[in-house]
Amino acid sequence: MTIYIDPPQWPGHGRLWSHLVSDVSFDELHVFAASIGCPPRAFERDHYDIPEERYMDAVRAGAKEIGPKELVRRITEAGLRRPKGRPAPKG
Image 1: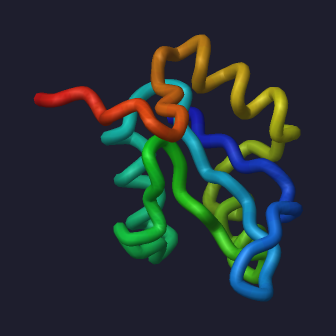
Image 2: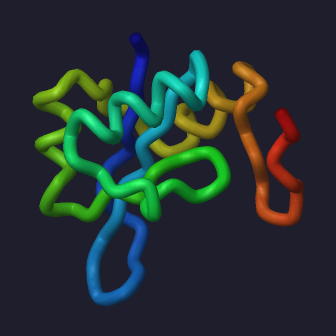
Protein backbone atom coordinates (compact mmCIF):
# COMPACT_ATOMS: atom_id res chain seq x y z
CA MET A 1 0.00 0.00 0.00
CA THR A 2 1.34 3.41 -0.97
CA ILE A 3 -0.65 6.39 0.25
CA TYR A 4 0.74 9.92 0.05
CA ILE A 5 -0.12 13.20 1.73
CA ASP A 6 1.10 16.71 1.02
CA PRO A 7 1.62 19.38 3.71
CA PRO A 8 -1.42 21.24 5.02
CA GLN A 9 -1.03 24.42 2.99
CA TRP A 10 -4.25 24.73 1.00
CA PRO A 11 -6.67 27.29 2.55
CA GLY A 12 -10.40 26.74 2.65
CA HIS A 13 -13.26 27.25 5.08
CA GLY A 14 -10.99 28.96 7.63
CA ARG A 15 -8.54 26.02 7.78
CA LEU A 16 -5.53 24.59 6.01
CA TRP A 17 -5.88 21.31 4.11
CA SER A 18 -3.75 18.47 2.77
CA HIS A 19 -4.45 16.08 -0.07
CA LEU A 20 -4.42 12.33 0.51
CA VAL A 21 -3.85 10.15 -2.58
CA SER A 22 -2.89 6.68 -3.75
CA ASP A 23 -0.69 5.88 -6.73
CA VAL A 24 -2.17 2.37 -6.92
CA SER A 25 -5.98 2.61 -6.90
CA PHE A 26 -8.98 4.49 -5.62
CA ASP A 27 -10.05 1.36 -3.75
CA GLU A 28 -6.80 1.45 -1.79
CA LEU A 29 -7.30 5.16 -1.10
CA HIS A 30 -10.88 4.67 0.13
CA VAL A 31 -9.86 1.83 2.46
CA PHE A 32 -7.02 3.90 3.97
CA ALA A 33 -9.21 7.00 4.36
CA ALA A 34 -11.91 4.97 6.12
CA SER A 35 -9.30 3.45 8.43
CA ILE A 36 -8.37 6.92 9.73
CA GLY A 37 -11.99 8.02 10.07
CA CYS A 38 -12.10 10.24 7.00
CA PRO A 39 -15.71 10.70 5.83
CA PRO A 40 -16.61 9.76 2.24
CA ARG A 41 -17.73 13.35 1.59
CA ALA A 42 -14.06 14.43 1.88
CA PHE A 43 -13.27 12.63 -1.41
CA GLU A 44 -12.96 15.02 -4.35
CA ARG A 45 -12.31 13.56 -7.83
CA ASP A 46 -8.90 11.95 -7.10
CA HIS A 47 -8.02 12.79 -3.49
CA TYR A 48 -9.31 13.24 0.02
CA ASP A 49 -9.14 16.66 1.63
CA ILE A 50 -7.59 16.25 5.08
CA PRO A 51 -7.77 19.12 7.59
CA GLU A 52 -4.51 20.25 9.18
CA GLU A 53 -5.46 18.84 12.59
CA ARG A 54 -5.81 15.32 11.08
CA TYR A 55 -2.55 15.43 9.07
CA MET A 56 -0.46 13.57 11.66
CA ASP A 57 -3.19 10.92 12.04
CA ALA A 58 -2.66 10.06 8.36
CA VAL A 59 1.13 10.07 8.70
CA ARG A 60 1.04 7.86 11.81
CA ALA A 61 -1.23 5.44 9.93
CA GLY A 62 1.35 5.13 7.16
CA ALA A 63 0.81 7.94 4.65
CA LYS A 64 4.11 9.10 3.14
CA GLU A 65 4.78 12.83 3.32
CA ILE A 66 5.62 14.37 -0.07
CA GLY A 67 5.36 17.80 -1.68
CA PRO A 68 2.37 18.84 -3.77
CA LYS A 69 4.19 18.73 -7.11
CA GLU A 70 5.45 15.21 -6.40
CA LEU A 71 1.95 14.17 -5.31
CA VAL A 72 0.43 15.36 -8.61
CA ARG A 73 3.25 13.73 -10.60
CA ARG A 74 2.69 10.36 -8.92
CA ILE A 75 -1.06 10.22 -9.42
CA THR A 76 -0.74 11.49 -12.99
CA GLU A 77 1.82 8.80 -13.85
CA ALA A 78 -0.45 6.20 -12.23
CA GLY A 79 -3.37 7.33 -14.42
CA LEU A 80 -5.40 8.38 -11.38
CA ARG A 81 -5.42 12.16 -11.91
CA ARG A 82 -8.90 13.59 -12.47
CA PRO A 83 -8.62 17.33 -13.11
CA LYS A 84 -11.66 19.55 -12.66
CA GLY A 85 -14.00 19.29 -15.58
CA ARG A 86 -13.06 15.72 -16.47
CA PRO A 87 -15.75 13.21 -15.50
CA ALA A 88 -14.88 10.16 -13.46
CA PRO A 89 -14.56 6.98 -15.52
CA LYS A 90 -17.65 4.77 -15.53
CA GLY A 91 -17.56 1.26 -14.19
